[in-house]
Length: 317
Image (cartoon, rainbow, N blue to C red):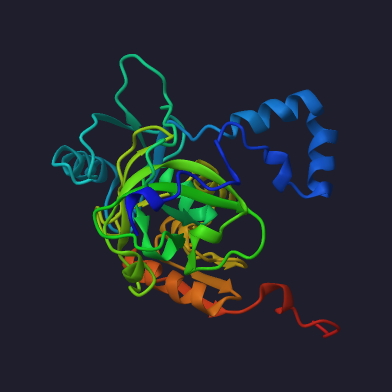
């Protein structure tokens, strides 16, 4: 395909800031939020949710390394360009959360979020799923497993416009983007590491190296410090801390995958006790088991089980 034939942008594309988050809200959920916050306050919350965090939160896996050593090792890796980015960063411990590091772009002046517009020059286009899109806004490159569709004729080395699918049916992995007409959000640009045919043939690996996004400049941490750290959002880090499991406890995790909170619970238990992890999807649990092993969470007992159907009813106790 010649460059002149490439798509400038899909018809359903909007910018992150112009996207209406209410479109994706269940009506019952929206009514509950309105009753709690009121229309004006809820509007402000939703508007602020359109801006990615200006930092990456990283939880130290204390089953493999202590926090001070983890901070030093991560700083050294970033200084060597291990994150694939030349921007300068600050790495500090969270003020409240133990074993949590915050990685921020080292800004003296200027905005926390960078405006990147879709190029008028036609580029190869790729479409990613929602979870992959969220990771891109946190500094991640794009793995082949997160790509839903790519342009016909896309070759290794092509510049790509990156879009995240956010709504509409008829979308499936392996589709060509020329026929895509659903709602999507422009995220940024990157360079294809593999061709279109390889994206849907390879089982894993990086499909697109992200060069710039509409979010802050944060480095990709994939592959750094194997199992010693985990990129995790603050709310996910808080949950096991509030649960407060102790060594020797018996804990049931009823919805374990992808396993981030489960491994945190194992660390807080110091791998002593019983931690039963349930997940109804076999594939998700297989991937979670790899994470348990990688992070040395030996206390975890993984089960492929729908936890909503695990209670034996009408039995005497």
